[in-house]
Image 1: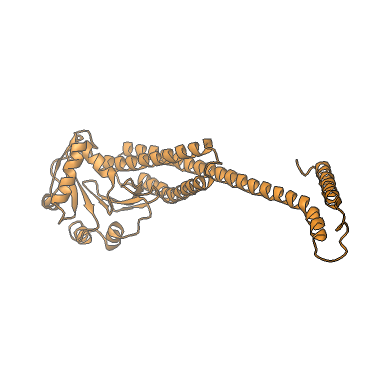
Image 2: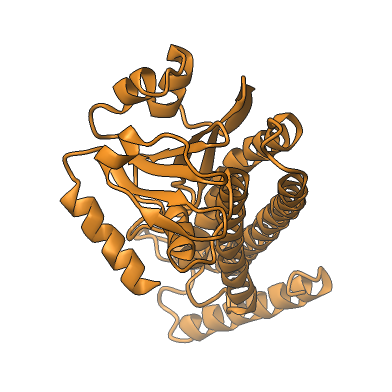
Length: 340
């Protein structure tokens, strides 16, 4: 598979002036042959079971023109396939399926919530997929085709694309749950600020993933319900299984988000409790020394007539009096349960 991926990247480089990232003509038996851009543009349905699959980069100029002139797609459909609107959706247009799906971004330096869109158009004999940023799912399926173990028709390719994208979402959810488990077992006193930052990141990821996965759930239901006849019954059943799996992933996201919220609330409650305890101790210390400070301040004023100014034992009398006041305060605080 690695060699096939490398070979495909070389194809991308050699055809950098064209829209084509890779092209395959499926033979209907799980395999296929590679085609270049000129062959893909000139391809016409030939042997029974053959399907043309072209994977295009919609960033490169000419995508809209090719979809319009060669495939004869309506302008709104062309705009959907090549525009920047990437909210998941799907609909039937005549004998074709048009869809926009989103997958987890596993590119280096990307965050899970920074999802990658994949546009799909298919009429049963020709399948066009378009992406703006690199997406691993189409390349993985292409490698299966090159190994002779890939999808056998257009409906199976679409089903495989959807299954791979949804399965990759699960790995991201599992990673977040593992981080939550580690945070729950960690000592909150070590670095609570760092823990709160990680929890906030997890909550943002959960919200972002759910924001994209919920409409994707609706898009998959539309494909399963409204797909043309060339989308076979077993493809619909597999899509239904994928929809059910996606529902479970959405439920897992809700659980992850709730777990992160509970952990975040617990850390904040601990921080507030520590702060309140510190303030409570400072209040007790201030209450203890307030009368003592008053007495020493009163006796320390530099005016005539201070009692005991000429008495050598006055200092020890004042110390004893302050000690007595301190003991009396401690007894009172103990009875009032201020030390509880």
